[in-house]
Length: 71
Image (cartoon, rainbow, N blue to C red; front, side, top):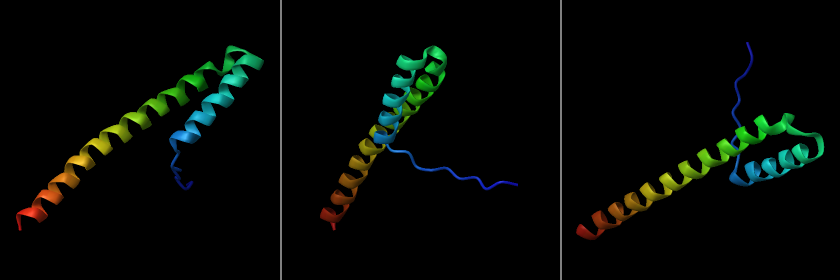
């Protein structure tokens, strides 16, 4: 039984990955397109999640601030 490990990948990591895979496609051909598509999809997911989280944290922090001012 193996150990499951899921590393956190940053937006910067994903962008660098796309650059590398783009270079591979240019140099070696279309065999790397599925990897490019997957990394690009992960970048979109990361950006969407980050945006959604920031939006709700902003609301939450405003709520906390309002609660403190009421007391």
